[in-house]
Image 1 (spheres, rainbow, N blue to C red):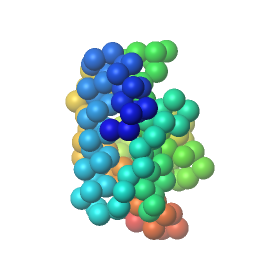
Image 2: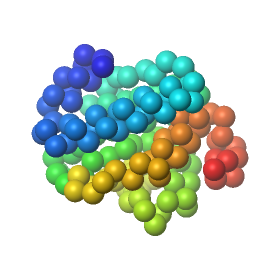
Image 3: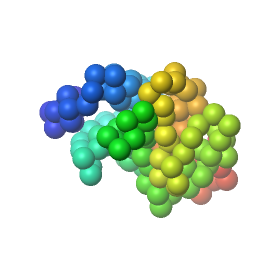
Image 4: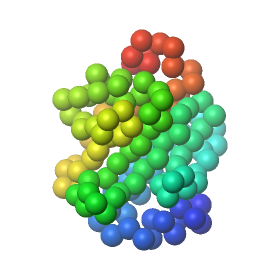
Length: 134
């Protein structure tokens, strides 16, 4: 784990850190499984950011002002969140066109998130397809 990112993770409450580490592992595993190359891990706007050459950056974070939720952020200039809403609006919650909102008290909706993350990590190849080819 990048040292700056690790320091940021260490600042979170334990229950939040565990959930964000779960998301981080999901992103890294998916990138490896899809053979997307090196994942650049860094901090952007104080949030852990993950990017690959074929995709759009993905950020994860928890905000003190919403202590029961944590977030996966996407570039709001893409059609990613609109596509996720169309595909999984019955399961996932969203914040505008920029984030998936997850509850700390609910199990991780892994299958839906895997599809969303795959679409984000391969966005450059899919951005012109209807529903990003999903």
